[in-house]
Amino acid sequence: MVANSRETLRSGTFKPLNIPEPISVEEDSKGSPVAVKIKRRVAIIAVENTWRIDDEWWRSEPVSRIYYAVLLAPGQRLVLFKDLKNNEWYQQGC
Image (cartoon, rainbow, N blue to C red; front, top):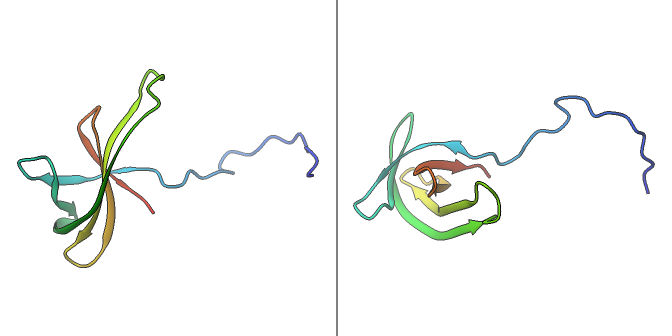
């Protein structure tokens, strides 16, 4: 077991990982993603998986999201989600 040094951690010691980043997404009439804008419009050629998360209902701001694992035209894979509380799209880093 490691002894507690009682030293205060310096600012910048921890770096958050996998922070969602806002992204511009073009939707079809059903609300599914068909393209993203990463410097320019890039078509989504396949939605490989979808899942929904409704969590932390007991908090003042619960989580409600629909995730999409997509394949872009150049072959890049991306995980997107639509926050159902604010209707905004985000890219989830890997």
